[in-house]
Image (tube, rainbow over all chains, first blue to last red; front, top):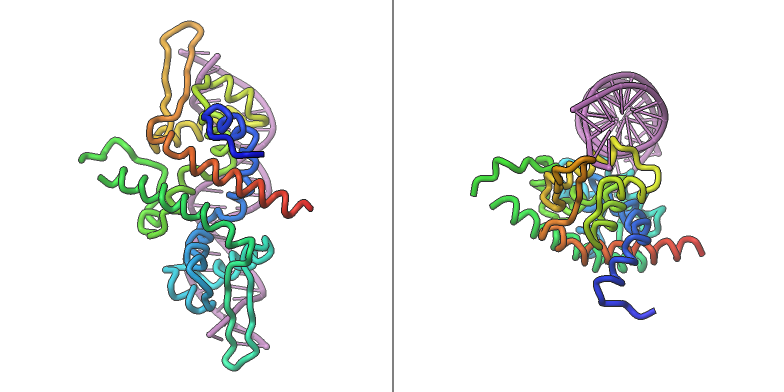
Length: 118
Length: 118
DNA sequence: CCGTATCCGATGAGATACTG
DNA sequence: CAGTATCTCATCGGATACGG
């Protein structure tokens, strides 16, 4: 089906798609996933880089969120058998498809922030 | 300039987060807001219509979510001084600006669902 | 360096009953 | 019709300590 641009068609689809939104929110929602995803959007990062870069996140939460997103198929964990150990995280191909969504959400959020902080 | 009237649902840690995504999620996230927003996207609805249309939502949750989104400035509550009482909800102008974001989230979520259910 | 294991308080949300 | 008021329970996430 071709994408309908009329307001009515858009909105009729939206109602039935509220469950689609629920899927998206289940994958990207929560306290830390936005921070992690925004960073991995720019490229591969090591565990320690994420830990250092994301202010105040604990190991427990970082690991939990990474594992969940790995299970959801949007990020990949790559272990290098070295000493000292090295683990990298990156978006999967499926994860890459989220980037337009993440960008739209970031833009709207920043617009909203500017509005309420003036 | 003065912003004393709107104590929105955001908390401090999200305000300090550089990623706008956290703002968006604070506004549209949760168990019921997607369902409510998708419906209000295509027009004004009465309280009873939302209640009847959104399967399994309780009065408590419906009211809580509506009040929160009203505080956040994305929906407006309009009371008609009639008997029996009548209250309508609609997106504000700011709320209307969310529609592209909601649509992108719905589409990605549906794509994801199709992928994982095959 | 890259994690696990436990404990625990705060928050989200369902069930039920009542009201101007 | 359009809500309030309680109660209850599950999940989220913070703090701290330890491990290969």
